[in-house]
Image (cartoon, rainbow, N blue to C red; front, side):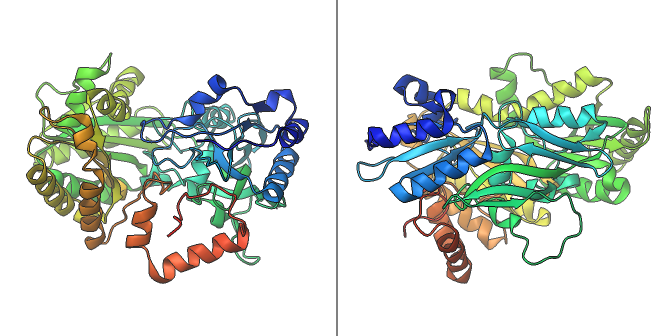
Amino acid sequence: MKADIDPALIQRFASIVGPAGIVTDVAALEPALTEWRGLYAGCTPLLLAPAETAEVAAILALCQSAGIGVVPQGGNTGLVGGAIPASTPHRPEILLSARRMSSIREIDPVNYTITVEAGCILADLQNAAADADRFFPLSLAAEGSCQIGGNIATNAGGTNVLRYGNTRDLVMGLEVVLADGRIFNGLRGLRKDNAGYDLKQLFIGAEGTLGFITAATCKLFPRPRSVATAWAAVTDPEAAIRLNSEARRLLGDQLIALELINRLAVDLVLEHIPASRNPLNEPSDWVLLLELGSAGSGAAADTALEAFLARALDEGLVTDVMLAQNISQRDELWHIRHNISAAQKIAGAGIKHDISVPVSRLGEFLQSAHQYATERVPGIKVVAFGHLGDGNLHFNLNQPDNMRPDQFTGLWTEISTAIHTLVAELGGSFSAEHGVGALKSDELVRLRGGVELALMKQIKAALDPTGIMNPGKVLSSR
C-alpha cells in the first residue's frame, strides 16, 4: 500500500522539475515499478526526473525535510530489487530518475577521459568514445538501456573485466548529491590524486544508499585495431581453468574476455531465442567464448588467437574450435552469450546466484554446487555460465519439468543459503557484480557481519542520518 504525499508538497516538487520532470499517473508509473526478473513489484506516489544537478539537490533537501524516502533508478535493469520503491502507509518513497540528465559534457581524447551525466545510456557512451577514436570497455547485455549512473551505483561488471576491471576501475571522478542536498563535486580526470580520502569510492557500488550520482568522469582507452573472437569446446571446467591460465600467460593484455558456458545454457538459447545457431557441429558439455583485442592492425588479433588455439588443440585443452571470420559471426557468438538470461526467463522459474570465487577454485565450486542442487531437487536444470577470467559465475537453476514454478521458487532461500555458504567456504563472494539490493541484504548480515558490517552502517549514518536514501536496500533493518 503506497503512502500519499501532501498535494502541496507535490506542487513544490513540480515547481522544481517542471511538467516534463514529474510523473504521477498510475499507468505511466507502472513500467518503473517492476524489476526485470519479476521478483519485485513496488509502489510510489510519483517519479521525479530532474534535468540538472541543482534540481536534484533541491529535491533531496525537500525529501529530507519531509521524511520522504528516495529510490534512485537508472534503466531498471537490476536483478536484486535495488531500484524498486516500497512505500508504506507511514513513509512514502519516490523514484528519482536521471533519464533527463543524459548529456556528454566533455570528451578529452588527449587525457583519455569522458565526462557524462548519470542518465547517459551505456551504449551511447560507448559510441561517443568510438567517435573520438577511443574505447570505453564496460560492456554487458543491457548496455542498450542501462544508464551509466546505475552502472556506477552497482559497480557493474560485464564481459571485459578481465582486461579492464569493474566499473570501479573505470571511474576517475564523480559528482554526487548527498541526502541533505549538498553537492560533492569530484569530477577530476586525474590518474594521480592523493589529496586525502578517495571519496568517490564510497558511492561506487553503494546502490544509491549514500547519495545520488549525477555525473562521472571515466577512463577511456585506445581502440583495439583488430579483434578476434572464438568459440571453443572443452571437456570440463578444470580444462577451462588451465586454458585460462595459459591464455593469460601467452596472450597477456590482448585477452579481453573469457566466458565459460555449460551445455544447457547454450541449448536454452538455441531453443528459445530467434536467430541462434550452434557454432560447433557437435554439442559440448562446456564451451568457452574468447575474445582478443590487439593494437596491431589487420589480422593481428586473429593470427594470435588462431596460433594459441592451435596449440591448445594439440595439447588437448580444447576439443573443437570455431574462429569468427567476420563481424557477423562475432555477433552471433555474443548473441548466444548475451541471451542466456532471456532464454532462462522463457524456459520457466529460476533461482539465480551471482557468485565469485578464486579462479583456481571454480571447478571445485561447480562440482560441489551441482551435486548439492541435483540431490536436493531431482530433475533440476543447472544453467552455469559467466566470466571465467575473473572468477564470476552465474550459477542459475531452472525448475524441473515436474514441479510448479511457485513450488520451485519457494525453495529460493534454502537453496541460496546453501550455495552462498559453499561460496564463503571457498573464499568467495555471494554478490559478484549484481549488488545486494533487497534480495541479499540478509546474506550481507550473515556473511559479512562484525566489523565490516559495522563500518558500513557507520558510513551510512554519517552520510544519510535520516535514512532517506534507498531505504531497506543493502543494509537491512536488522
